[in-house]
Every structure is written in C-alpha cells, then in structure tokens.
Amino acid sequence: MNVQVIKQIIESYSVEQLKQAEEELLNEQPLSIEIEGKDEGEQLTHILAAIFCKEVMASENLNINQAVRAYSQRVRGSIN
Image: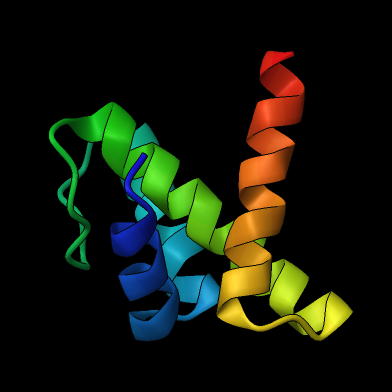
C-alpha cells in the first residue's frame, strides 16, 4: 500500500470510475484507468482504499489527509 498513490487516485478519479476498475480487475480485464501497483493485488488495494477514502470524505466531510488516516487506522485495526 502506497499512500501517495492512493492520494493521487483519490484526486484523479470518481467513485464510479474506481468501482468500474475494481470490477475490471476482479474479472481479469484490462483497466480503463491508470492505477499504479506492482501487481493486481496492490492495484486492487489502492482502488479499495481510494473508494473508502472518497466515501468517508463525502459522508463525514473529511479532507484527503484525514480520510487516508482513517483508512490507515482501519487497516491497523484489522491487523491487530
């Protein structure tokens, strides 16, 4: 997971575009948008993180840094 990549994706694409990219990855189709990642797993992680952040930004009126922090805390919570 690369926070800078996630921020770039958040700024560049809509939730609808990201959900389409998620479907494309899950169906082993070429991506219609540019998502950095060393493999499909990392690309999917970046897409899902960006979707979460965009939705949290909209629902809780957070800025991008706060949303990424909330996502990071969620990931840490699931690991512990």
